[in-house]
Amino acid sequence: KMFEQAASDNGAGMRPGSAAPKRPTWGSARGPSLAEQIKKIADNDSSVTRVDLSNQAAYQCKPDEYTAQIAAAIKKNKYLKELRLEGVGLGDREAAVLAEGIAANSSITVLDLQKNRINNDGGAALAKGIANNTTLVEINLMNQPSRWGDGCLDAFLAMFDTNITLLKINWRLESRKSFALNKMITRNNEIDR
Image: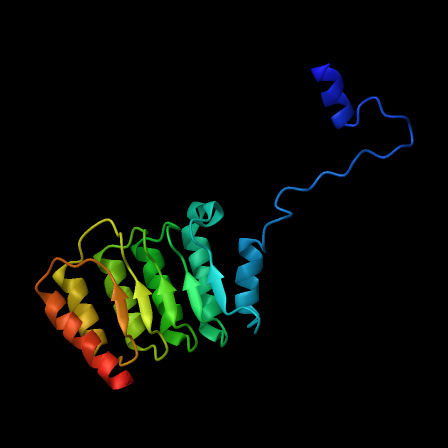
């Protein structure tokens, strides 16, 4: 009986000319694809103010390719306020490419890069990109694979020479430079008041 039920569920044994029951297609309940979301950012779609690509398997397979597309797209986007790229496999190279987009962007206020593979070189590149940004308020860099070294933290300190808009950095620091960095964040928060 189980086989008969399965056969009837699959449309087997149906009369000729009768239509099999419609099945939902894969992904029909999901939102836009990764490529569609990147295209909307690139097209400067005013309805797209928040993009969350966190933990997407497709992104994890080709982080260099998708990061280059996103970096190019955000350079000219005026509406995107929040970009979440948690756990998508970003390394130092991808962070450097993304930093170029952040430097030119004038709309993103929240950037989530936690749980990636960004090390000192990528962190320093991000700091250089943020130095030229005037809208980013918060960045999340938690759960990276290694500790941030003094060279990277020096780049963040130098970033504060020109950036007065960054109000919050989520990260774990085990360095004496953390006091100087906290002082600069406090300065930016006081300026913002």
